[in-house]
Length: 147
Image 1: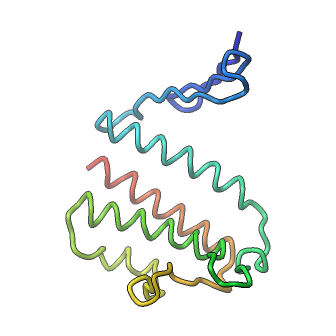
Image 2 (image 1 turned 180 degrees about the vertical axis):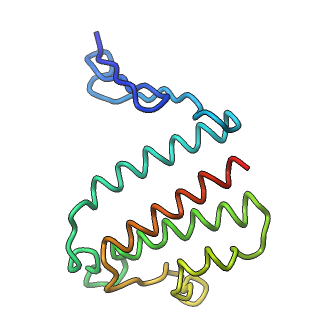
């Protein structure tokens, strides 16, 4: 028989019947539309895994890019994740053409995708600053998606 563990309002099942594969049963988070609540839960789970993987990374590792420059640095990806979340919220969900000035202030670098086809290159930004931006964007997303 498998082992069940509750995570938030969801359960994770592991064990022999799943052959070592985790199965998530998602229940909506309270206080919001059930479908929105399920996606907020999924976003939270993805964020937990991301934070676990980047914990304690040094600046060299955050800024490292592949020698052929076809990849993205971890720091660039972290910036991109927060920026995309805010884009989804304000553009796709709220229907605005621009993010509010208070949100834009958290993204001081000019987007490069339209010029280069790549996400914004972010270097020499400390892990703590990336974590603060991710925390703030998630808090804003959570709060505003319940409005």
